[in-house]
Length: 237
Image (cartoon, rainbow, N blue to C red; front, side, top):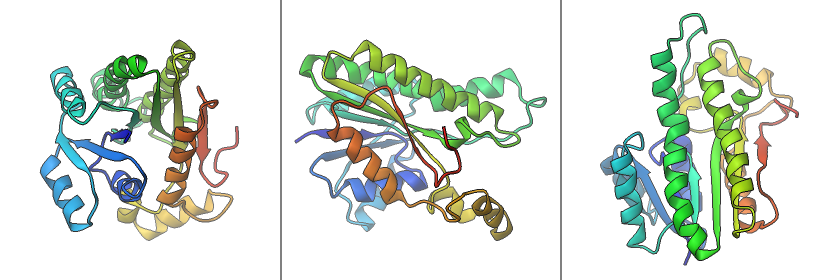
């Protein structure tokens, strides 16, 4: 049985994805800072998953996470989903704020990818999928830092894809738009209406559509170095 490691497993979108991935023929490994809350969520929702608490901005925590994953046979599929949002006008953004955001949104993926690749190269198989955002391609006011962090992530994945292109490993990114789950549930209705009006299909996406993309990237050995856009036409490359 192949193992999927999903980082940032405590977020709203991640929980919706995890519930769907649990039905796939893989062992699901989840990590988040608040592991106890995620364990309870999995128990209440009857999600079959193993959970490990880790702060991915700390290398020692990432090392411990991958040591733990090795007890289940290692990481075959890594989904770099850990991330936080940020809003500040660019003239108010400090370098320290950007650094903190990059630690979570970018460097956590670098740390996890670097360790995952060690085992994947030995096995001659691996899938690395990083989660980006439509905002990386269509920024809104106050999102310069968030845009930078996700743009860096996409560029990094393209470089990784090239480095391991002959090793049976693929590296790709999913950039999704506004999904009907997670933080969107807490947005006031007038703002929701404005967001929806900016989407050509005039509705929000569903977590199932993200899982469809994940499934495709796992199964496709000839798709690598790509960014898949799931945003209802909000951004058209």
